[in-house]
Length: 151
Image (tube, rainbow, N blue to C red; front, side):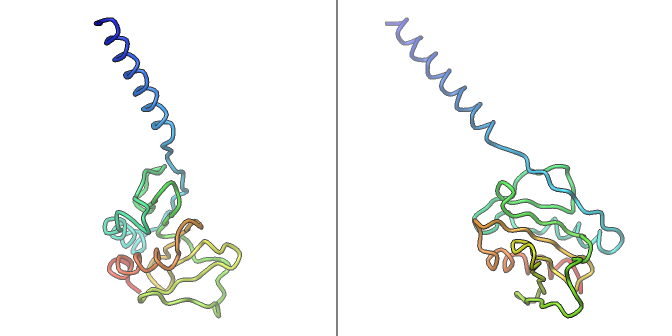
């Protein structure tokens, strides 16, 4: 009986170890190229990073590399925010900007999942995968952006 019990326990431990290895293998760190803002833009972006929500449209904040106070990621890279990016090259002076809760967003016509908060000390770029509703994400980002990045 003791031999059978030891065999059962060994089997359970082996299964748990395999599951743990499989789960660890599934977790990936997202790679994001961080921007390099300076001056007032850098300071505003640092403040934004501190007040961003833990979750956006059901996706939790996650690890990314390289580490940067100018980047935040939710889900497995489903939503990525980069603060202090350059002005969008595609944004003409007459480009349409959508106001969402007091933040002006430029939607890149060539990249429909890319949105940039404009008319502020720092440009904030947000990439949103098709798994999420852009309006929901941008609404949830409006207050933190308004509180930390002046116009």
